[in-house]
Length: 280
Image 1 (tube, rainbow, N blue to C red):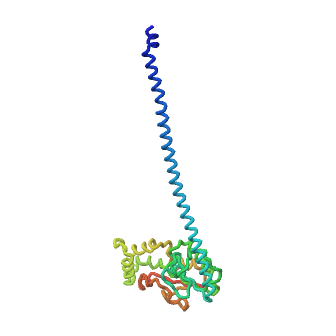
Image 2 (spheres, helix red, strand yellow; image 1 turned 60 degrees about the vertical axis):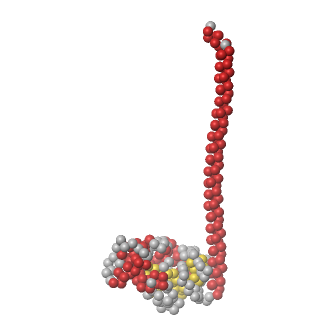
Image 3 (cartoon, one colour; image 1 turned 180 degrees about the vertical axis):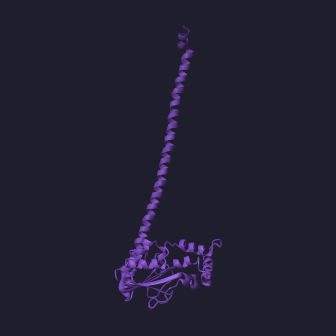
C-alpha cells in the first residue's frame, strides 16, 4: 500500500517530471558535443586536404616551369647551333666550357653564360651526325658516371666528321693512387699545393686527403686511369688514340686551348691531368 501511495503522490509525480526534464535536456547537449567533434574533424580533414592540395599544386607548377625553361633552352640552343654550323666551314665544339671561351668555337655548357650555348654533355645532342670537326672537353668526363661517359663518347663519335678529332683532359687516377708510393719532390709538392688550394684537412695523410678529394668533391663521379679511358674510347669506335702533353697538340686547332691550369695553377694541372686525342 505504501508503495502505491508513493507512486501516486505529488512527490513522485514531481520527481518523475524532473527526471524527464533532465533526460530531455541531456539529449541536446550530447548532440551538440558530437556535432562539434564532427565539425572539428571535418575542418581538420579539409585543412589537411587543402595543405596537401596546395603542396601538390606548387609541385606541379614547379614542374611546369622547369619543363618550359628546358624547352626554351633547347629551342634557343638548337637555333644557336644551327647558326654556328651554317656560318663555319670548320666546326669546333667545346663541351663544358665554363669560363674558357675559345674564339671560333661553339662553346657550350649545362649552365651557359651569355657567350655560351646550352648543352647537356650526357646527350643526346641537337646536332646533326657527321657535322663537327673538333670536340674538346676539359675536366668534364669525370663528372659523369661510367655508363653516362660512354653515352657521351658515342654521341661524340656520331656527330664527328670522318676526319674529325676529339681531345679530352681529365684527372689521372693512376697518378693520384701513385702518390702513396711516389717519394719524389714533385709528388710531395703537388700534394701539398692541392691540400692548400682546396683547404683540405691536415689530419689525413697527404695522398689520402688528395685522392678522396678528387674522388668525391666537385661533382666527380668516375675517375679514369689511362687504360680505362683508352678502353672506353676504343669500345665506342674511336681509333688513333694517343696521349699528348697538357696544353700541347700536333694539331694547330687543338694546340694551346687547355685552360684548367689558369684556375688551379699550371704545375698542379700538369702533374695530375692526362690528355687524350682520338679520331673517328
